[in-house]
Length: 250
Length: 172
Image (cartoon, each protein chain N blue to C red):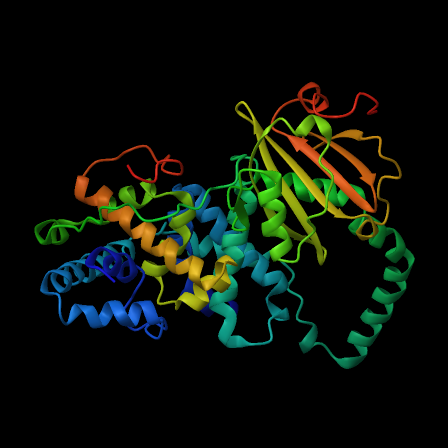
C-alpha cells in the first residue's frame, strides 16, 4: 500500500469506531508509524474532522421546534395498546378482526396488484437515492451482474429498446419479490424497464400487448411475456414512451 | 421514556441531520416534526428501547427520501475512486472554521455522500449503525464517507462554492 492508497483508506477511518479490524485500515494505521508525512497528514485530517464535527453540532436549531413537536403530539392519539386493560384489548382485537376480514381480500389484491407495483416502481426511479444501482454498458453485462446476485436476468428486451444506450440497472425488491431493473437513456431522456415474475402480481397483464397508463403524472406501459411481467417508464410524455413499444400497444 | 424526554434528547440531533440533508430550515423542521409524529403513532411497536435513536434517524432519512422523490430522475452513479488528490485543510484554516462555512461546504458535497457524512460528524454512530440507518452495506458507508470527506476538504480548502454536480465529474 503506497502513501496515496493509505490516505484513501484512512479517510474512511474514525477513531473509536468498529472498523479498526478491517485489514486495509489496520495496514494503513501501521503505515503511520513508518511514514512521517502520512502521519502528519492524518493528524491534520483528525484535527479538521474534530473542527468540522464541533461546528456541525452547533448548527442552530429553531427555538420553537421542540414546542411544535410537543404540540403535534397532543393532536395525535398514540396507540398505547400495551397499557390498556386486557378486556378492552380483546374487544378492540375482535372488532379489528371482523373489520379486517371484510376487506382483507380487496386489500391483498390492491397491495400485490399491478397498480401498486406501477406506482411503487415509478416512485423508485424518481428517487435520488438509488443505493442498488449497478453500472453496466450493455444488457449482457447487466444480465451477468443480476445473475450473479441471483436476480431475474433472463428477461426479454423489446426490439425498439435494443438501440438505446444502456447505463446500468438495479436489483430491487417489492413485497418480497425480486425485481430486475434496466436503466437506459435516449438522448437526455431516461428509460427504465422493470421485470418481475408474473406470479408476484395478483393481476398481472394477461397479454404481450403493452397496456399504457399514466401513474403519478408519469407514462407507464405494462405487459407479460413468458411468465414475467414487464413495466416500462420513461422520462418524457406518453408519445415518447410509445416510441419504444410495439405498434400494437393500447 | 416519556415522549417529552425523548424529544428533548433527540430533536436537536435529528434537526441537524435533517438540515444537512435538506439544506432548508423549514424542510428540516418539518422532517423532524414528522419523525416524532410517526413515533407518536408507531413508536410503541419498537420492542428494543436501545434502538430508539436509530429508529428515529432511520425514519427521518426515509421521510427525506420520500420527500425527494420526483425531484431527481436519474439514479446516482457510484464514483469508482476518490479523487487522485486528497486535500487537507491547512491548520490555520481549521482554527478559523465556523458553522456557516462548514454547512455551506457540506452542502456542496455530492448528495449521495451527504447523509453518511452528516451521521459521521453529527452522531457517534458506528459504520454498522450508519449502514443500518441508510440501508446500505457497511463497505458502501465507509467508501461514501471517505469520498465525501475528500470533497468536503477540497471545498473547505478552496474556500469557495462550486456547483454540486460532482456526480459525473470524479476527477475535478
